[in-house]
Length: 443
Image (tube, rainbow, N blue to C red; front, side, top):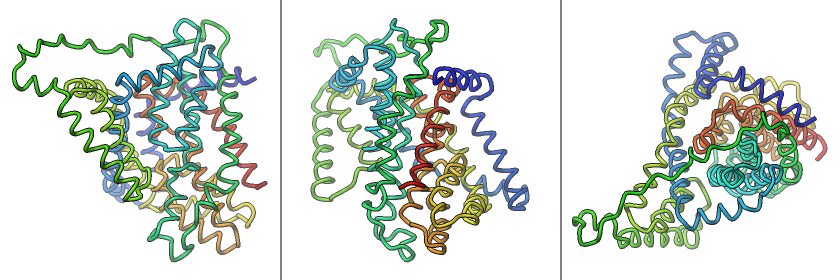
C-alpha cells in the first residue's frame, strides 16, 4: 500500500510539479490575486507590498548560505568525512538506508534545525555512495532525510516556543513568559516527536520501489572530489604561497574561534542558534582543513550549492510582504478562530498555520503574524495558550513537506530537483498530519 501510494504521488509530482523557482513565481501570483480579491487591495498596493518585503530576508538568506557552505566545508575535512562514512556504513540494505536517513534528521533537527538540514543531507549522500550498486532509490533516500525535518519546531531551536519564553517578547504584556515546560517539553511537544521517530522511518522505507526500472541510484561522479593541484616543494613556493600552505595562520584563527565558542557557552550562557552553529562549523573547518589553501578549495566547491537560496529567497520575502501587509494572513487566521471552541482552537490553529506556512515559510515570521490573533482568541474562549503556541509551531513545520523553501538547502547539496522528492514527502505530510491532529484533540 505504501509503495503504491508513494509511487503514485511521485509520478504526479514529476509530471505536474514545476521547478522550485516556478513554484515561488506561482505562489507570488496566487498571493497577489488573493490580496486583491479577499482584502480588496489594488494591484498597485499589492505590488508595493511585494517590493517592500522583497529584501526583508537578506540577513536570513546569508545565514542559510553559510549553513550550506560551512557544513560542506566541515564535511569535506578528513575527520568529519570519516564520521559520516562510519554512520553510512550501518545501512547495508535499502530499507535500513531510507529509515536511517529519516531517524538521523529527526534527531539532529530536534537538536538544531540548521545543523539537522546540512548534516542529514551530507549523510544521505554518503549513504547513497556507500550503497551504489545495491538498488537504493536515491530520490526516496533524500525525501526520507527531509521528512525528519517535521519535528524541528517542537525541538530545542523552536522559534515560537523559545520566543515566548524570552524576556521582552512582543506578547509579554498579554501572556507573560511561557516556560518551555508548557510547550516543547509538554506532551503536545514531545509525544508527536516520539511517535514520528518510531513510525515515520518505516513509512518512508516502506515506499521503496521493488522493480529495478523504477530505482534511480546516485551518480557518484556528481559528487566526485575536485582534483587537487600538485603541491610545490616548500623551497619553490613564493612568500604568498607559503602563507597559503602554512598551517600556522589556520591554527591561530581556529584557536581564537574555539576560545570564543567556549566563552559564548560557559560565560555568556549563550543558546544554540544559527549564528553560533555557523561560527562553530566555520572555525572547525578552518582548523581541520589544516591550511588556508585547503580551506579555500573546499569553500569554492561549497559555493556552488547556494545559488537557489540567493535567487529564490527574495521572492518568498516578497510573498511574505504581501501576506502580512495586505492582512491576508490575519484574515486566514481569524477565519479559523471564528468557529473554534476551547477544545478545537489548538487543532484549527495547527491547520491554519499549515496553510499560512505555504506563503510565510518562516517560523519566527509566521508567529509574529498569527500569534497575536490566536492568543487573543484563546484568551477570549478559554483555550490553552501553550497548546495554541504549539499549534502554530507544529503547523509551521507540517507543510514544509510540500513547500520547497526549506528543501532548497538539502536539494542543493543532494543535486536533485524538488519534483524528485515531493511525491514521497506528501506521504510524510499525510501521516504527520493525522498523528498531530489526533494528538491535539486527545492530549
